[in-house]
Image 1: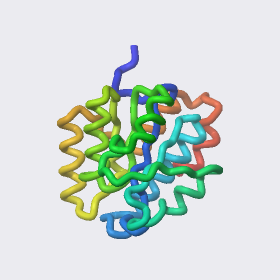
Image 2: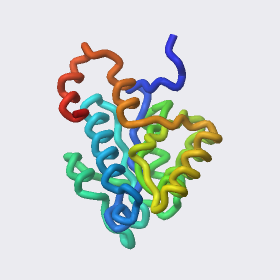
Image 3: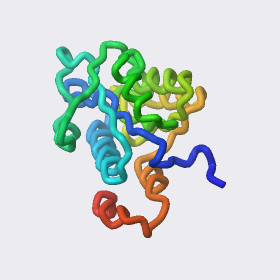
Image 4: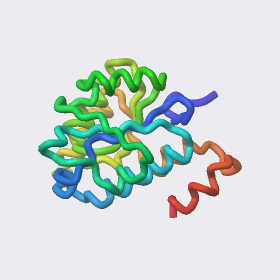
Length: 184
């Protein structure tokens, strides 16, 4: 029997929310947030977990950080003006096409776009896991408030390595050796 809070790579998608440079540098501990997001994208790609990227008003906030966008052979973020990713019809359609049960959220800002996306995902029937060490806000207090609200609403708050090892399941998995250098 598997606990419903345990991530399964066969039925989850990674959502990278608004990791744009113009806002990123204002985020508390932004280097840690960026590092966590990059690791999660690399893990997801290695393990075959779909990755969906959004950008909040890119004409004003600029493009996604190149540390993330450069990881894709074909980079096509979903542009949005709504704070929730679910405010973008193309995003909703893509998530529906993927047929996943769980969305794994990383990105910024934790108390605005990530929280509103988590709430809308829960309302749409998805299980939600938020990677606490790969989300951020301009203030630590706002990040903590966002995480608390998401937890109260039913999201699971977890971490980069927790998610990775749940997706891996077994040290004998063929991907384990490929991912090991990313962990160290």
